[in-house]
Amino acid sequence: MTPSVVHLSHIRFGSDKKPVLEHLSLEVGSGHFMGIIGPNGAGKSTLLSIIAGLIKPSAGHIDLFGKCLNQRTQHKLQRDLGYLHQVQSKLPDIPLRVCDVVAMGLSSYNTSLFQRFFANKSIEQEKVTHALSLVEMTTHQHADFRKLSGGQQQRVRLARALVRQPKLLLLDEPSAALDSRHQEKLYKLLRQLCDEQDMTVLMVEHDIAAITSYVDSVACLNKNIHYHAKKGDTIPDEVWREMYGDHVNIVAHDASCIGCAPVAKHNAHHHD
Image 1 (tube, helix red, strand yellow):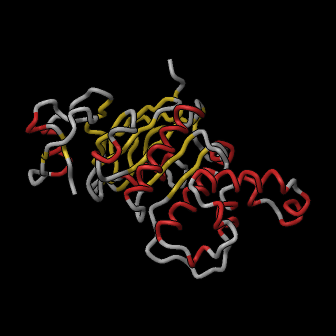
Image 2 (spheres, one colour):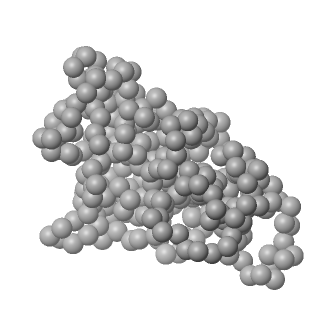
Image 3 (spheres, helix red, strand yellow):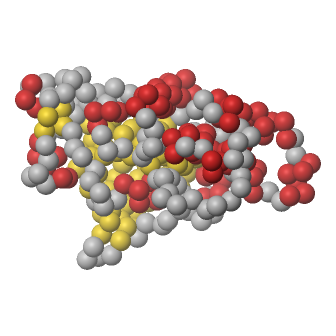
């Protein structure tokens, strides 16, 4: 049996009258690539922040790598975790080189200046260069981060999440600002990291059709998990309508996609 990397039990977040998440339970094993979909306000970003230990749920229990996530264990467990937030609309106007932005993802980055000065810098530099090579940004490592295009900045942010070579990678809409070619390269890279390094990836995305060839499963989220589709599973139409309402459009797509019905008129589910 694949060891559990993420185990959530009866997670709740928000007020009693207006919960953001409620009765949410989920278990994800090592090397698993999960896509998380759902409408705006469904709690997708909140869920990732809870797993990352950035916010505390109102109720429920969280295990990461087989250990309880709490105030005492949080710092140690976060060393094996990479997190890519949603793209910020306005970035601070701070002159930073690309390699410095990526280095912020290293566990050692927060050590004192004295310790960092005498640390083995070559190892850190190798990790930064390797992370940039994964996203094809090595030639920009000394460039001013502010002067990059939106897509290039997003790839650098991904490198920052990957630089510590995490066992668990949390991604909140990582394809934002990427063109279609780099989106496909991103999904292929994540699939490769899961298969070759046993990395576990939880990725929030809007378009199920774009990710279905790469992920192992799709979790349908709207306050709780309405359905967890794996290879060969079909997500019932009523689940889509529970998440998005009656206005959801059901359009044809490749029958091999996760969550898609084999019948032509229900072959795939796509939403905006």
